[in-house]
Image 1 (cartoon, rainbow, N blue to C red):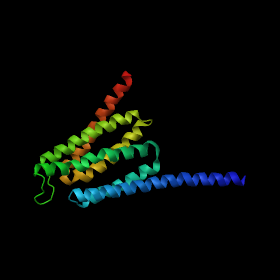
Image 2 (tube, rainbow, N blue to C red; image 1 turned 135 degrees about the horizontal axis):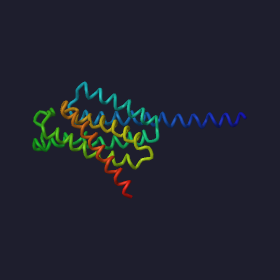
Image 3 (cartoon, rainbow, N blue to C red; image 1 turned 90 degrees about the vertical axis):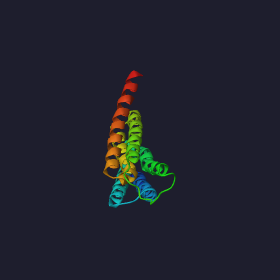
Image 4 (cartoon, rainbow, N blue to C red; image 1 turned 90 degrees about the horizontal axis):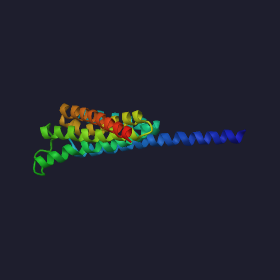
Length: 186
């Protein structure tokens, strides 16, 4: 009986350790994304708030595992274009140079935030229909994508933040509907 108890404790420890390590990976990824955001954009108190919430979200999603973890990592990848795109657009608009290196809320940057968010949202929505647990996957992916994208688009002000959220939701719903129709047609 003692061997089985010892084996059970070891298995439980290994299981719990893997979940804790996944949570720590989420915190490390959030820290890396925060450093990238600081290098690409101007920072404010809102940037640090979003970075902290992203770290906590990725830690919880990583710890939960399954569709939550898969969706969380997919959302981080989906949030990269809205994180980087405003900087690229700003550099292109200003001829590759930054006059004072302070990103302002210009209309092209706001449109790029909405456009990239809509595009990646549709991909996330479609991909969620293919997962074993589509709702969990979609919720995790949308939350981590929104927070990752807000590190970049949030620097353009309230318009960029609203643009990324509306773009992600509209794109995800579109992707979900298209994915559902494709699945029913097969």
